[in-house]
Every structure is written in C-alpha cells, then in structure tokens.
Amino acid sequence: MKKLMLMIALVAGLGLYAKAQDKAPKTPELKAAKQTKVLAKQLGLTNSQIPQVNAVLLAQVNSQDSLKALKGTNDKKEQRYSHKLIHDQTQAKLNAILTPEQQTKFAALVQAKKEKRMAVKKSSAATPAPAPQN
Image 1 (cartoon, rainbow, N blue to C red):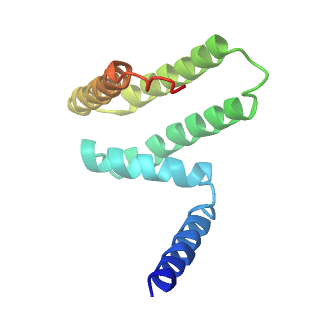
Image 2: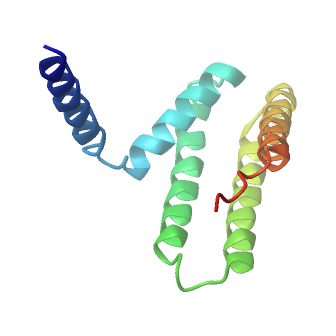
C-alpha cells in the first residue's frame, strides 16, 4: 500500500512538473498591456492616457527584449547601462503623459519598488552561503 501511494505521488509530481515547463513566453503586447492595466489602476489614468502609456510601455518591452536577445554579446556593465537608459527614457516619457498628481504617485511607486528590491538584495546578501561539506 505504501508503495502504491508513493508511486501515485511520484506520477502526480512529475505531471505537475511537466505542466510547469509548458508555460509559453508572454508576448511584448501582453507584457505592456499588463503593466498598463496596473498603472491605470494605481494612478487613475484617463481614457486618453491609457493608449499613450501602453505605446510607451510596449516600446520599452520591445527594447528590453531585443537587449535580452543580445545577452551573450555585450558585457554585463554595458547591458546594465542599456537597461537603465531604456528605463530612464521610459520614465521620462511617462512623466510627460501624466498629470502632476499622477507623477507624484508614480514617483512613490517607483521609490517603493526600488526600496523593495534593495531590501531583497540586502536579505539575500545577509544570508550566509552554506558551508561546503567534505
């Protein structure tokens, strides 16, 4: 009976693992639409702002995807600089679209995201690596 239950658990686990591998990559349009939806909810975008924000975010996603395709050809510093440049340009374009009140909310969102990223980075750096076992 134990062996039967173990085999069932093993088969079920393998089935779930195989299903997790079937995830199709999201298209740039889907990524931009999702980001636009989140920003529309958090910033209270108007109907005229939504297509403009979507176009800016789509351009950003396309640029970053093309950089990822070139991942092995550039060094890491150049890659990081390119990503930061694209990110900064996108934020400037978004700020041009947003109202002053929305710009304030957007800046707070960006700052919160940055702080969260730094906290995760600190916690992962503070966690000691496991000692090698001989």
